[in-house]
Length: 292
Length: 257
Image (cartoon, rainbow over all chains, first blue to last red; front, top):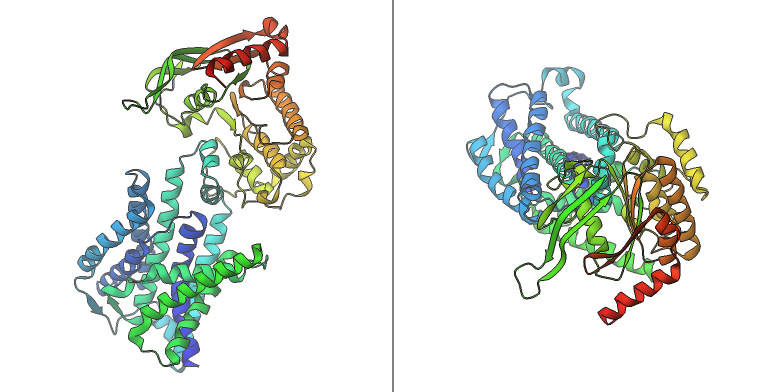
């Protein structure tokens, strides 16, 4: 039971970030490495604000806004300064490492006995303490659902249509008399906002900030998106956003299973990468078979 | 009215491969003129369109639309008044979006792309009506992704989409070249109908000499960055396709083709 709850907890946290990666990777076709920096950025902002006595719910919105700002910087570097997509992300990711240290003050900041979105008087009143594991999952599910709902709605707006168009056919966006660069910046802002939001939720759930928490975020995000979209490709009625969320949980389950089989917790990043590679190879192989 | 004044355009400027495409080139296109442009490969037809649309920069000279200078205006801003259809049918539509979404997208051109619903449900009737005029049955496939349509169907949609909102100029870049003869004919007739209905100023680049003679009220033959034939109205009506063909062979022979 506790393993399942653990899988759901982390799967849902990373699902928020994966929804952002879905925008950059699937919609914009932009391999955005800056999420490796914006995920911990959200965490750093959150611990600092919570320790300063700001409402934990408000920190979610502030983390999103600051993450979005970082995404704009990646977009600016790529679009206006004409640096290649991968390099723009690397530049921002690397710079954010120092920024995160500055924001948080030090590499490891624990915060116990303060109220978070998971531990506050309202939650304690609604749910009995014996169900604390379930409570966390329920709260996470609500957050993920709200984010997914808003994203789905956004993609149906005029602005959302334009975002999808820029990934689909850049020339058409120009034909519509719109600056495609600006549309890309908007997409990167939303994606990195979501990554920072995920980082904020992650820290509030774990009760600490750690500078290396962002390492490999993009790999997890890509794995989640690819598992989700490949798995549900043939099923028309499952929305891509739903597929990404389910993909996140499946991926986390695979990682947990590997640890359950006797791998050490320190092997986590190794497992993450190898599993991602396996997914990529597997999905390539299947595509070839279909073509032949 | 479009005016091109003293256009100079070199490729690989300052290198041994320098190639002069336009040297002091000038052209004036009056309102509601439908210009067909023909010429051999490398004669500057597509470059001419790209210069007008701002897809490529020019070295010197100026481009004016209705008297105002747009030489330094970015490409996407110019497109506000221009509709453009490309040779490649995939360029004018979004393959992963549905027919309805594509129509809605085109309909939003010139309006703010804000948080209003992407598809205005009240416009669906109008979109169906417009698609019906194509005679391809697309009005019954509104929720089909454009990527599964044939080249001809996509090109018809691209033409419809580029002329849906009020524009002044229509730029057609060999827009029938990738289609089979029958579909090309349908698209060409449709083009003529839209141009006449909306009274658009049109520039059409084509390799089909017959289309160039049959459609439009002005014909340009480009050769090495110059207009070697330029005739309009009555003069063009009297044109014989054999004369054009002869002239075309002449310039091709000169090039050694």
